[in-house]
Length: 169
Image (cartoon, rainbow, N blue to C red):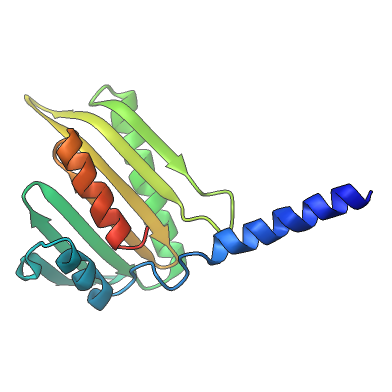
């Protein structure tokens, strides 16, 4: 009985530590978004800002050298969750229809300390055009962060992962 209590205590402590690591480090505003873009030596003048709508407060987008990133700030957490789930459903539908070939994975939605994430890696075909894609989408409260490349080669994957890390995800 003592061993199982110790194991439970260690597991709960580990869960708390994992949940707290990165708290406050994940980018959720314009300033952090701009700093992350700059830290990876991208031109911050390429960041565009859009006013919101019924569900979105503000959004920020960036594109340079085949790498894109977006920060969408919703008016409430429920709208962000709905948008995130809708994105996944649309991607899954494209995969089911054969318009996307590759990996589509949703994770982190079952644990309160984890960040819900969608990872995409493969080839998307629309009409007669096809393009490779590699990227991540993260749900963090009322914020969605997306980072992707229109390529899934080693350099593009490295660049996406570096920007994801700079954004704190």
